[in-house]
Length: 441
Image (tube, rainbow, N blue to C red; front, side):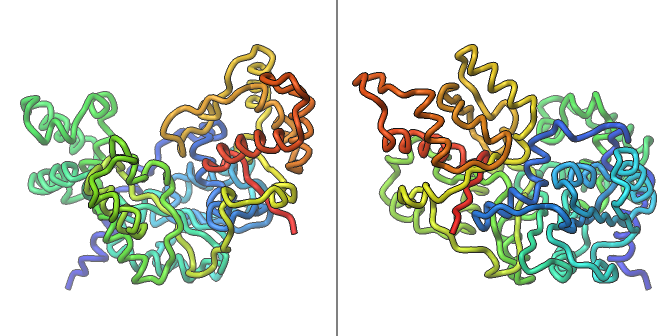
């Protein structure tokens, strides 16, 4: 008797054997894709959960469903001196991943042809697990989460995602259509891609499926149909289903990866002037309820992209909005590792010398909803961060040297005034994890 689950896994394996994903050339590097590195850097999610900084040296990081290894390379670039392990169902993908990491000089990475459900067979424990664009393909994502949890260190964090059913609704209709046409009976290849293209182009422009599930990108790169209209095993999920999976596996939700883009209150014209019922009820909702309502109102995100970990392992911390001056004075300030490049430092120096505003969004804009332009004179006090972590007080003293006189009163700037201004700048940047604040004992 045929096993539907095994049959599906075999179809998925065959698809990625034939067309490993992603199809980036071996030579291509993610070094300059700072948004990607920002997410893949263990420092980001660890700080978000604990308000602590972790050193990635000697950490063991798993790329579960590594595909052709581009994500594994990004993990290696984002986490210096960490050990990278990759697994994938497709032997051809594993072969390419191994070649890719060797080409870029990461000769200690290890890759295995293995399904995610069989991770315990590795006999390893991981500090960070990346399972990107894979979980929604598993016949049972709960089994995948359970397997990842079983090999996760107590302090460890999992980054994974599910396709949003509500956002991709029309792609699932297209998949059903092409299933009826027999295009998914075996491994889709160029012929099936061409039949999809011909079908969609033959439709009138006002046909809903064409409007919602086809655009010029598919005409210019027809193979995109393989990972959208012809993706074997593709399934969509809702926020409620995501949280049900976490509950079933006893995993704790930490945050959506693009947490600033899931702010429920941002969907309203004026958050300070809501109808009475909403004004009373919305602030009392749990994070699950808020995300569920956001999804119902505005299903704009293709992925339910999130971090999770073992329950009750996150450190309780006091929001910086409640810190006293003494708290600030005992703080060491760090720049996010992905911003510590010579190019970004030189760009800032150019803005300072030319008197132009400086925007971090030019480099990492993933957590932002809009540009944040900063006074180049004030940001100049942060220049020492490119050399390493600095005491808060030293940044204040630097600011007082840059601006010793109050422009309004023409009196000398007081230490207290300097503290308030530097605090304000750091608070604005810490919200997006551009700076990381380490309180010393």
